[in-house]
Length: 276
Image (cartoon, rainbow, N blue to C red; front, side):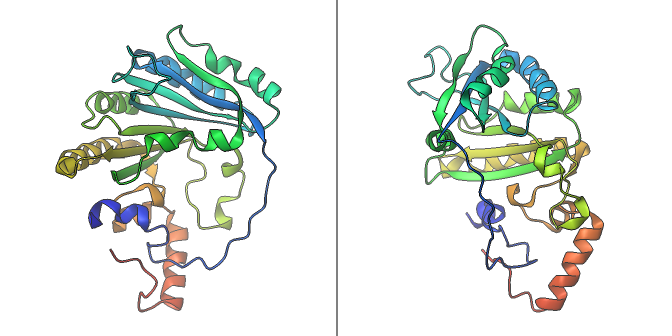
């Protein structure tokens, strides 16, 4: 299991440093917000992605949405005819006044008739914990990640092909629109890379039976390889293999060289690195 989990455990394990303290700036949220889930059948994939792309480009920063491609689980709020089928879930909400959020999110609800609409006024703590039921303890995980400048037709077709042939019913593909506050910080002021990327594609491969490890690893790696020509880099914490190439491509060349310089200065013997 060392190989499968290493990238997730190495939050600081790329060897560049050890976090000894954090300073947080708090923002008031809730207690009630407007958000939740909308679940669409897979046949509406193009419509959903097109709407999300257009909508997120002009949405306020208080609003977030995550597009999740998955298999509908056998949960009480999902119609039986939809359970076990491929679905697209929009998960998110408006971190402001719920009444304003209802108005702002109304276009997101405009696609098709066949859907499960679970968006409405909701406690922020409940919204935050919605994914918990889909991520039980003691399952196997192996993730891959790519930043994309834009989500165009060719990468969408690649994602669709693998999405319909996923070996595990609990695996998900996340299409995360970026921008907002993330892109407002000058890129040269910190180590975090690729703030100008518009999309973060996470291949969240999950399975229960250890005997199915190889087929799930291979599926995840093949999908990642086919998306590579469109990639502009990686988010270091979302990759199950922290290879040298992945680490380098998680930063631009200038940032990477500066991090290596700091590393050699303060930790020449490579003491501060996670080993699994």
